[in-house]
Image 1 (cartoon, one colour):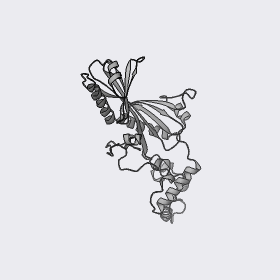
Image 2: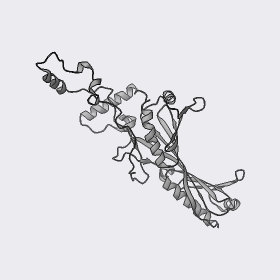
Image 3: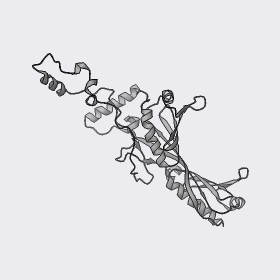
Image 4: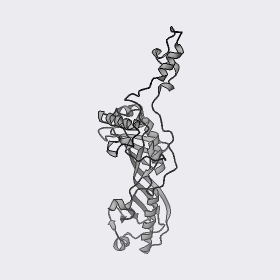
Length: 301
């Protein structure tokens, strides 16, 4: 359902859990008591009942235009990872501001901000020795940045010890391949809070995993959780809920879907990227989840 691309190209082995793979129901999956009466063989023609059934089954089935689409893949973008750690010593903020590089002394806030170019992050340093780092796009990148800040403080003459590192918050975004009727969605689920005068999206809170989601009518979803794995799990949990309230496709989307099916029936290759619908724009991989991050080279080119 969702796709995640790691920065180093490695694939995560965690699969999707709890995602509805097939949201449609075919004729063969419908119980007998739900099949209309006209689909049964007429009982009055006893001489050829079996032959009529065989003829009906042998006719080629023409799929309707509104045939259920394949399960889409969703790219989860990790935009920000916030972490904190302690250096276990008192820090002279004035000394850091005078001798440090890429620093700014904010006297009114009682802290010093320090920036790194690789990885592109910002650290808030307090005199108590507590440091908060923001701007990383993965948990590994956040730890590398935190250790580089600790090394920079050590070079300034402080007795630094790298302790109590933890990821505090992760911000991720994704886009559903369909629009969402957020008013009907907020009325059905009590966990959803919709105040159009204050915010254009629906605030939905999950408790397992603990995450807060902002759902917009365009299909965009913003997820705030404690770790990258919780962001991934939150998307897997919310997808079946919002799929029920998806908006119908526009005529342009229906035409693109029709072209894709025609190309597939002819045995041609995949359509070009500009002709693919939104759910097919992402690269197809065997692993159902991969993480999209921005490298430092891309950010500075």
